[in-house]
Image (cartoon, rainbow, N blue to C red; front, side):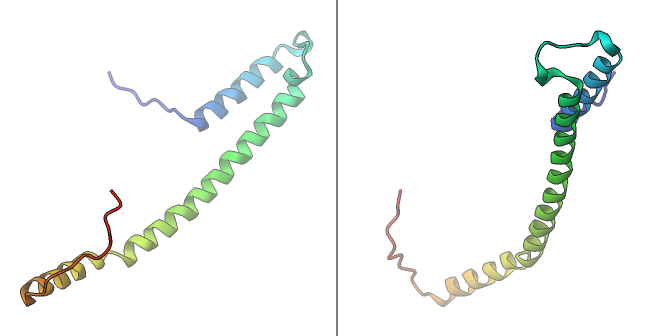
Length: 103
């Protein structure tokens, strides 16, 4: 029996929302001693996390688009490089590397 398991930040944010709804179901019985654990604070943190996830999705889409454009631009470079190296090899020219190896 195989299953699909979601992991990562999106799952954690979703689970945080479940936790907040679980606490809100307690009603007035949920009265934490720390103000940072109040429902209002937790809801604000959930909103911040959701906004950050949406922002990350937008930024990643831009990154992926730029990467795909770069990949398309350099796609023809390998065949061209092979032709240049082969032509250079056939010409009998000797390559002298004047730059020192840093390693």
